[in-house]
Length: 194
Image (cartoon, rainbow, N blue to C red):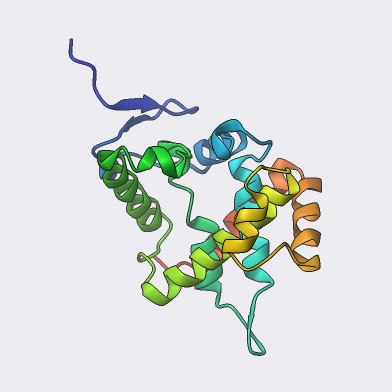
């Protein structure tokens, strides 16, 4: 029998990697995977769920002039890596060698956005999401004393600010349930009604 590109989630749902539109998505599967997947290929103690909460809180604290970011943009930030609960948090260097992976990752990213009632971000929204994701990278690498911490700061806006450190410490003190609730609340607040 020829192996198929599939996996089974914690709840028993079969995931067909090449057909995300046919797969059911359950919050409990996202939460379980996010709690168990380590970022940085396991090189540092940062779970995907920590990252979800960190980017959500960073986005909620952002201002454009005197205005806060819209609920949609905060939701897009919170949601941006949910697909990694299915495809994993593959390091960028390896992604470069796996062009088919990039295509599959994009399919799952689109599937998760649609599931939660989001259109994919436009170019301006994608820049805002990217900004927060890179600031989270700076915070995470500094907090865990990752060897690339100084490089990330140099490339992405400097060392973590006092406010970013405060957010990091809040995230690390939260229970997994609170991290998940915070993230999903932001996602649901910014989605369009179905």
